[in-house]
Image: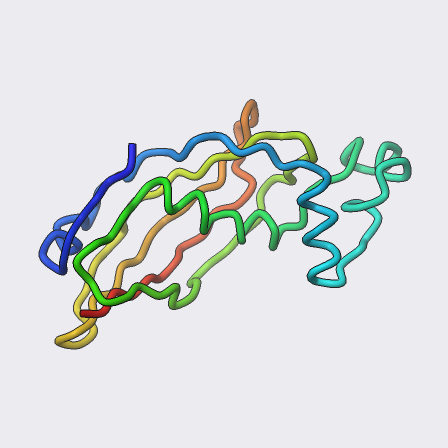
Length: 152
């Protein structure tokens, strides 16, 4: 269920809140291949299905940065911020990839608002702790602390 907030006061009230989990998203070979084409990263563990079968993961895996980029659409399922002029992804403080995402796996996003602070009269900053979970795996695919800024 998407959490909807409007304006700075409601954003501030999110501090410490667990935003829950997104729906599951299957990571298909198509998406991996498209990402490889977009980034120029055609390493065989991502795109060569035959060779990858004999590799360390038993098949192709998603790029770590693809997994990271999927936080964006999954985060949109968790939080809807209204009553601001714009929101921007300000960056990341920490990113790790504890477990590979095998092609065909399903992932989802778990998110918690770590903190909210005022940056300027017209801007608040939210730190979010994210974990990209893999269906059936005890270890997450990605853990990250993201920084978002919202402006009036």
